[in-house]
Length: 96
Image (cartoon, rainbow, N blue to C red):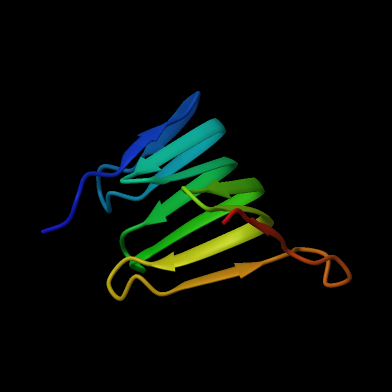
């Protein structure tokens, strides 16, 4: 019972046995006022997990965030944002 999530990419591979889907290149995700761009997205329905990685840019009305990896639990909607290089930090900009 939630709003639609629109995913567009240059390529996708779908596994009809377990429904896992692997998107790659120029991925754009739109959900309400939220937009995410990245280069790879794995929807792992067997594990109830969405993995977004490779040059993530998240934007909404007031926030712009840059990171390397975003993991979303498809059941709880909890998420974890991280960088591949532990010496680098997630960049986040907030507009009032």
